[in-house]
Image 1 (cartoon, rainbow, N blue to C red):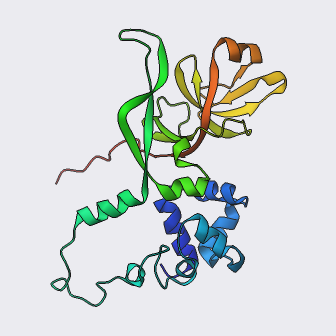
Image 2: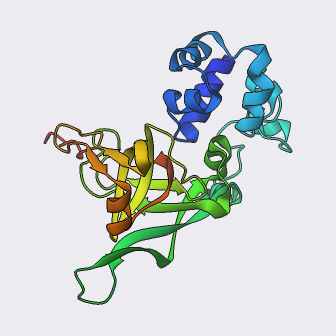
Image 3: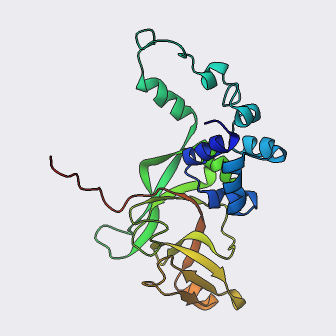
Length: 252
């Protein structure tokens, strides 16, 4: 990684942020971010982006010094630089895990579950003892307070190809006010749904699927929203992406 653009690209990959998501967060166009990848981050925005992604601005600009605030120079330069394999300390995955845990947030997992054993009625409820570990930098980049974040599984193909069936989504419970065209998690009469949401006059809502060819738009009046107990759980700020299938390995 020789340029600040290379380092920015790597940081976004670590945070599972696309260029378009990052652009929306910074209120610039995706083309701006792609230009930063190619030409480097403008000096006027270095400190702002470094603070957002929790790295030192000097490291982001030049690659010199510690990557993270409070880190040592060895973090960036590599404390084993110049050593042979025989000179190095044995690799310890425990050390990596400990460092990861210090920089991660444990987010509670919610899921659509029956209201009672054997019941056909469902509700969106927390799964006791189940947590999803997310890098704290993701939450910081999206302006999400850790105690407002929850995770849930994506079920169905309504949001494919954007969010695949089986992916994990992360939701900001503090942001329930609808911003047209953003993705929200909703509870619809006990069912967990993930849709683009748009406001309509008289308190109505339009729900749109990414896979709109298979799932047409749905419009609910204010009365239907109340009758069908439609509640916006929060803004979807992150999701994991799963491949559709494991590639077949040709036999030797």
